[in-house]
Image (cartoon, rainbow, N blue to C red):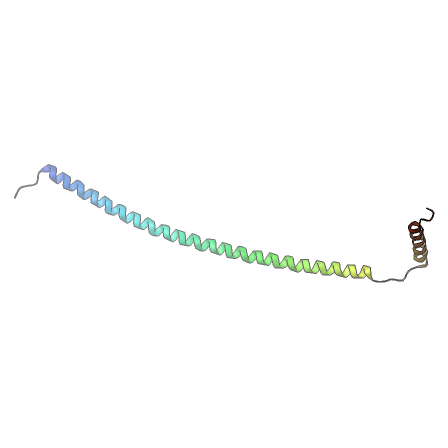
Amino acid sequence: MATPSPTSAAVETAIGRVLDAERVARDDVERATREATTLVGDATATARAVAERAERRIRSVRAAFETRALRDVAAIDAQALAQDAARDLTPGDLVRLERAVAALSSALTGGGT
């Protein structure tokens, strides 16, 4: 059997180091892939939680706005009804009304201005 030459021993050693480096690199890539998958999963879960919390807050603000708007509209309606309620005319109101009717009648019939 022939003894390996110093050159072939050096080549075998170098090949062994390359194979070891490839194995380490492959392991590193696999570990990085697992870590990235975990990070993506965590980020997705966080984003989902933030979106759900934002949606709850939006619903709460919307409900509060609707409640306030309904209350304000009801108050405005009540105020309008109160203003539309009939009231007795005073003697002064009647005089002013008669003058306004006379002025309108005169304007419509072409009477003196």
